[in-house]
Length: 401
Image (tube, rainbow, N blue to C red):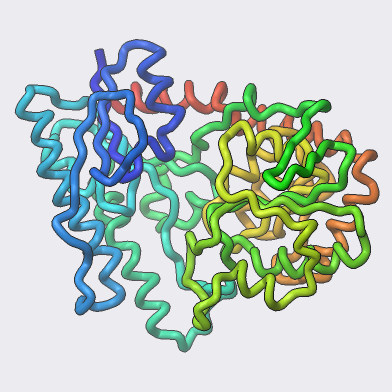
C-alpha cells in the first residue's frame, strides 16, 4: 500500500478528482492537509493547520505574498508532525505550490518524494486591466518578481512538478522545465455532455432552452483579468441589434485576480452604470451547482471566455465538453486549445466592437455550427478527459515512488 499525502490550502482544489481516483483504484492510503478555515467536507484522514497571523502591514509590499506563504508553511509543518507521531510517513507528497502548504514538507518527511502542482510563474507584471505594465513601473516589476519566492522554494525542493497546460509550463525558468510535466487535472466528460432537451428556469421565473438566443459568461469574479468590462460593453452593443438575446453571467461580484477599482465601485456596478444595458435581459446567477452550470452550458448559444495571458479556467474546457460554441480571446492559454473556426472561435481581447460583432455572427448562424460543437467536445474528450489524464497522473506518481 503506497502512502500519499495531498496538501492544499483549500483541499481538494485541483485534487478534486485525483485524490478519490487513487483511493478508489486501490493500492493507495490517501491523507490530506489543509487550512483550518476550509469548510469543505473531506472524506480522507486529514490534519488542519492555522496561520498564527497574517502578513504584517508594515512589511515591504512585495513580500506580503511570501510572508503569508511562510506563515502557512510554518503552520503546516507543525500540523504534519501529527502523522509522523502516529508512525505514518508518506511515500509521496502532492502539494499545491505558491501558497505555502508544501514549503517545509521535505523537512518533515525527508525521504518522501515531492510532486509540486504549479499553476503560475510570474514573468513580468500586467496591469489590472490586463495590459503589460509599462517598463518604468518599477514597483509592479519588483512585486511581480518577488511573488515567485514561494514557487522557487518548491521548485528547488520538488522531485518533479506538474502543471495543467504546455503554455503554463513555458512560463517557468528553462532550468526547471525538464522536471515539470504538462498534464491537465482532467474533466468529467461523462458529466459535461451535450443534451437537446435541457430547460433552465431562472429565479425570476424565466425559462430558457436551446431554442432561445443565450449568451453565457462564467468566471469566479467579475474583473478585467477575465475580460468582464469588455464583455459587458459588448453585450450592450449586441442587445441594441438583437431584442431577443438573453445573457447569463455566472460568478460572484468580486475580484479574484488583480485589484479592485479605485473609485469604490465593483466592476459589475461600474458596467451597469456606464453602459446602456437592458438589465431585464441580463441575469446574474451568482455561484451555481455543477448541475446548474451544465444546464447553462447546454442552453448556451455562445459562451464567451476572455482572459489575459494567465491560468486557463476549467470553465472554458467544461463548456467545450458540453458542446458549447465558445468565443475565446486570442491569447496564448486559449489558443493552445481553440483553433479559430475549427473547434471554437477567437476574438481580440480588447476590441469590444469585434467581440460584439462575432457574438452577433455566431447567434445568427448558430444552427449551422454542429460540426464546431462536435469538434469542441472531441478536443476535450481526447486531450482533457479525466478518463485519460487520471491514469497518467497515477503512473507518474508510481514512477516517482
